[in-house]
Length: 290
Image (cartoon, rainbow, N blue to C red; front, side, top):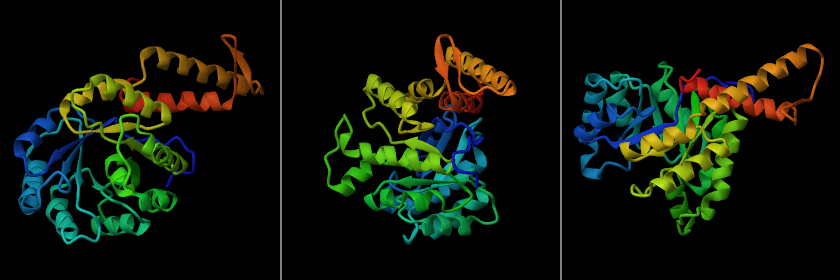
């Protein structure tokens, strides 16, 4: 496990595109979408009477389809459900790139999934979507070395709270911040909640930019048409990269001279600003821009 606060080198997860595991046509489309991650869903995206068929479709798709550079993840049913063990058994031999665990409320749930997939060193991503899950964030984030990301599920969370989901999102704001703080404390990626209005491109872009500004590494998606706006929001611009590179280089020179804070372009620069620049450059490297 990385040291708390360390800038950990992780692959780009700007977009996690969820696709129903029982729909071979949609899976094929997702495989060619260019999403950073394609999540083959065995949980909420599949009707109860289609769960067993979905396992076979997911396993077959993993074995036969080319996903380009997309990370191939499987969202299984929750730990403790009757379906969970069979989901792992049916898909593990098809070699997914990792697993998404829904409705995580305790570190033991992550550890149980880690044991079921051992010795394969597959990354695990935990979906935080209940009040109890939010309250257990510290323990969940530190639960297992193979955990690489915390995913924030605002839709399920607000339902669990009995709150009314609004466009402004104030009902979930505290939890949204708590997820990204816990992820940062344990050098994990934080992935923001889905944006459910497929026709509101401006709203999607605005919410994605807001999430990036909060420290989120990416956002979940429910349709390929959302990907370009999400990628745009979570990918540093050439100008931002150039400024960050210059700041880090000048800071390094001052450190070699035994100097701390310094002025650059009329602004005082200290360690937090350098740290922010290093985070931006890490995102740029993950996205293949440097």
